[in-house]
Image (cartoon, rainbow, N blue to C red):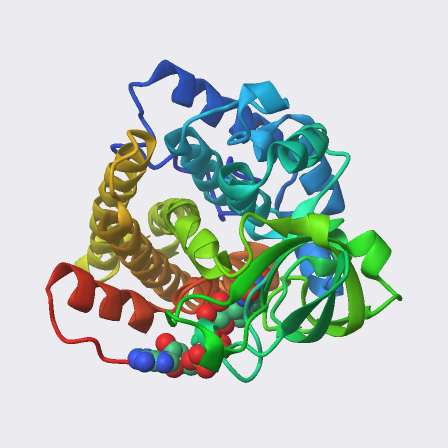
Amino acid sequence: MGETAYGGRAGGQGVAVSTPASEDPDAEIGAVRGAVQALCARFPGEYWRHLDRERAYPSQFVAALTEAGFLAALIPEEYGGSGLSLRAAAAIMEEIHACGCNGAACHAQMYTMGTLLRHGSAEQKSHFLPRIARGELRLQAFGVTEPASGTDTLSLRTTATREGDHYIVNGQKIWTSRAEHSDLMLLLARTTPREQVARRTDGLSVFILDMRLAQGTGMSINPIRTMMNHATTEVFFDDLRVPAENLIGEEGKGFRYILSGMNAERILIAAECVGDARWFIAKASAYGKERVVFGRPIGQNQGVQFPIARAYTQMCAAELMVREAAGLYDSLRDCAAQANMAKLIAADASWEAADMCVQTHGGFGFAEEFDIERKFRETRLYQVAPISTNLILSYIAEHVLGLPRSY
Ligand SMILES: Cc1cc2nc3c(=O)[nH]c(=O)nc-3n(C[C@H](O)[C@H](O)[C@H](O)COP(=O)(O)OP(=O)(O)OC[C@H]3O[C@@H](n4cnc5c(N)ncnc54)[C@H](O)[C@@H]3O)c2cc1C
């Protein structure tokens, strides 16, 4: 049994799964895919297994992606990035996952940067973006979710109160992933009490927080151990002083700024799910051909091959929706419905493929060295975060189908 192109032991030769989008006619995107595959080949299953066991951060992998410029894909060239399309960025994330690696260690930098790019001042952009593009600063932490408010972001309780040329921040965030491996955090906090705002979406503001200065001077970080290796944390703010110049855009408009980045986030995460599905399907197809029981390959049995074929079909449908959503995004058209639907069906496709892959491998699906149980745990997250499935369904019900708002 050897290492496959997907970074793990497939129990036989790896099978490249050909799909509509992975055979992209766009030469630039094809080249990006090839470059990502070459980089990922340096980080095989053993690398991820070891980190998973230790719950350690993939620093070398993230450094390699940064050095190759992949994490600056969406930063415009004038700020030192490569100014690629969202379709190209989605291809990067898809390939990372299709190779058995995990982009969750660093994907936030791609989409949180958009808030700064779209709503930051000229000074903020020229100060931060080139440094992020060069890898001198990491913008990996995104502080939105809180323990009490959960999905109901408008009920968040962290406050930022203006005092002279500073804001004083108090409160707590939870599930702030990569906080220990980031220099900067995009922080959403309430600047006007809820009962004093004209519109319910007003009163929240976004800050770009320098975590290197904040650590120990009003901010503390507590890691949360989870079912997969995700470097997530809870973050506490106790009279943290944040310079007023770190406010992004207008005070009170932060919720809209965060929402404006959600479509890119949904599309990139959906692409990761498609990548995961490709990995599971390749792994299962290879094993179905190689594993012989009752004198024939298990994949000769329809009971084994049909779930693989079904998972492949679902993945291709998800991939087309990701491509559609990213194309709309790149042509500056409304893509909210497509971005949400892409995230929904891609997360379902990866989860179905994960379940199928475990089943196809029987007992070996549970063995650490096959990497399947690790990827299974990793891909389960996407039913819940960064947006849970129910909230996508309610978005489609309300905003696409015109059904009454349910919450
Ligand atoms: C590993 C991990 C990493 C994360 N990283 C980040 C991060 O970096 N930054 C960040 O800000 N957040 C992060 N999150 C938070 C994530 O976005 C939330 O967990 C997610 O949005 C759901 O919120 P919640 O956990 O509070 O669930 P809750 O809001 O408590 O909801 C629990 C369940 O009830 C359902 N539900 C709630 N209300 C409704 C309703 N009205 N209708 C139907 N169903 C409903 C939800 O869909 C969910 O299934 C992360 C979470 C995890 C687990």
